[in-house]
Image (cartoon, rainbow, N blue to C red; front, side):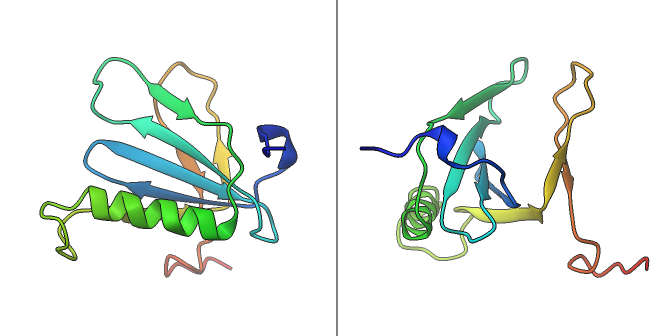
Amino acid sequence: MPLTAAVISGLQRLVLYETRARFFLVGCNHAQTKHRVLKIDRTEPRDLVIIDDKHVYSQQEVRELLGRLDLGNRTKIGQKGSSGLSRAVTSYGIVDNKIKTFNLYLLQNEKENGHDFA
């Protein structure tokens, strides 16, 4: 039986990856055994296009998916570091501003970003 979206009750960690055409928001549970992926189209200037494939990925499946995305989005196939897939930010939550704007606010651990306000 395939895993469905209801399997993960709470996402503990979110990583935003980007290519020239899309953002990929990868969320996982605390044990990092179950992952979900949202695809956000960045080519449509007027509409917010979000694709949720409803699949629950294992850690190995997510690694393979990200590897294929990186390889498929490089300027030249087989060339490393040529704008394939890059990690934009790691966060631990999302803030919804309840206003009809297309802003995505990700909560980050300040110590990971070099800021320690404690």
